[in-house]
Image: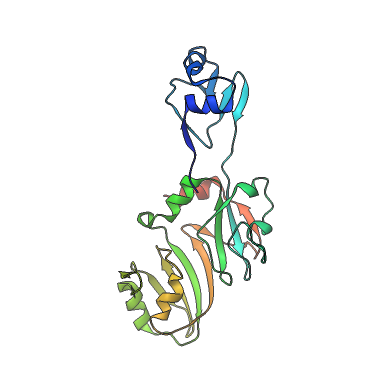
Length: 235
């Protein structure tokens, strides 16, 4: 989702009865307040979360929202769907219809999904150069061995895109289960990486994104992320 950023003079003209040419005088008279401070220039940037007050009245007072949801199996990673229950159907939050999904999960994949109304935040999480780790628990159809660990560390070649995946950490938990941590999110990446060994993924569960872990959040449950979690995400 694209973040909305505009110049102060354009924002005022679009959200009040004043014209662009009026804004200089409004600033000089200290009638415009941005985030608690008197506006200084017509060129100041107004984002979707800038608090804008004109003559004591709010023109904009949007609040950012950051949520974690424990996606259950059989729910669509979408905000609306004609046939299936969606993630938004599970959420009870006053700003739920402003939210978009950060890092979708397949229909039968479970675990951590993040939602927000902050486009800049979601883009940062999704950028490959951010290298934010996503951790999964995987159940396979065939037994695992140490060859998987080495191959995942070196990277798996995807012929369709002509690329090699970034190094990933694989920990074998049992003969048929493993914990996988990677920093990418390519199309069906986990299933395709194990598909390199002709090993079918029977179950896939995302336990964390960066420092954001499910903890005791039950399937279908959601909660607002804390300020501490948001700060530590980029630490």
